[in-house]
Image (cartoon, rainbow over all chains, first blue to last red; front, side):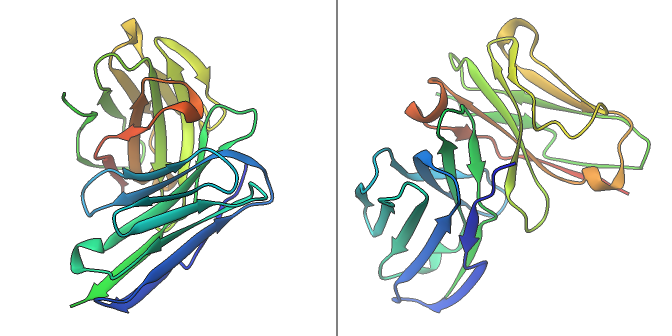
Length: 111
Length: 115
């Protein structure tokens, strides 16, 4: 199956710091989604990207759809304790109708 | 609007037993997906229903897994007989639109532990 390489696997940061994570693949994707999963909950959509080069913000979150359509990154600025959780990227493969997910980035924020 | 609901939230069974997981999608969502996440790994696609029809079941691990969506409403995923490697969190997601034009709404997941 398709593989999305998501990094880093985990991060330990201080409150107020900025965070960056990314997903890469050897395949071309039509859509990139970024989800956050809180403990005991299902993943919740943060940002959706539909066009190569697209840069989209949602509050302190900014995500970009890579120009090659093979990667995407998510930035979180001025992190706060409630940003703690697992962040997943998901890509819709060109000509397919299902999303492939990365293995997640576990974010820990120290107050 | 009620979200995607899954039952049970956690199931602990012994190897060789049977477990049935249930998913109620958001009302009006024709697309229903099952995913599984094994600890530390990616959320892996299992299968996709459009209404009551299996659109894509290429991710189903083997014939011990059976998914149904009779009537195009709720779906069940049965594992029989369960093996140790079946342990993980099984997520159900639904969407109104096909593929990447719509958001995937996830349930809270059903954690399966096979001993």
